[in-house]
Length: 367
Image (cartoon, rainbow, N blue to C red; front, side):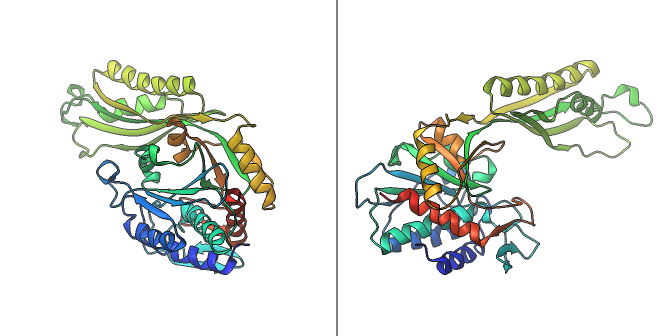
């Protein structure tokens, strides 16, 4: 059985530790101390120059005391902004921040469930195969930590990432994503004296965006403009305007089609008005998909059932470390922890969901 009081107190401790993306070092130090006390073998990789973080990914291996297929567990250390100075508030069995920051249950609910389960199997000498926890950095800024994991260090070919909402959910497929950074270059002119001599980059970009299919394209595909920028006084025809965008799809062909469509809209508008286009399209990560009877899904579903949860298989529209793991030959799925209203200052999680998630992880790592 998990220690519910310790689980709650550890979670409250963890969310109070500042760990916005690329500033996870303090959280890494605390976690390394906790894992070392449990008896894990710790390895921290040297990926800081690639991710921009002030610490590397953490690999914590608990040697097995019984035969069985090793299991790899995953959670990420970073939070989105605003995540500095989190003050958790517990009321009516629900944990929130005081309202001016995120809570950080994304993904410290996953982190604490793994830590508590490892503590229990060690303290109670429960038979278990080798268990490895991988705690990544910079997940929230493009899955950077898992992109540069040392995959030859992983002890098994199956992985479970604790990084989505409702407990009992098993994410069987996730989208690939393109990032698109585009700059339209027009021609500067005086807006009052000779506007016809100019080419407004803002006008060109606006027309391109107005012709794009955006937001929900179909059940598998989405696209969004995150930001546009041009900073000129009103008496100057804007020479440059920039756009940051993304598109996602669980279907590889649809992802390529949507990215090509967005670029084509930009090129057509530039050609119409005589502007030029500077564009960089970057594949952030590939899609993944598992059959419903895949071994890792059967294994996770059995652990959920044993913990009193009802397994529910579903696709996702979000990226996770599982995308990069699958791309590197690891059979990885994402499971729910109870995190709710994530990436907002209304983020919350129920104590009961923390407990059921830790119980599920405990069942997963038992022999």
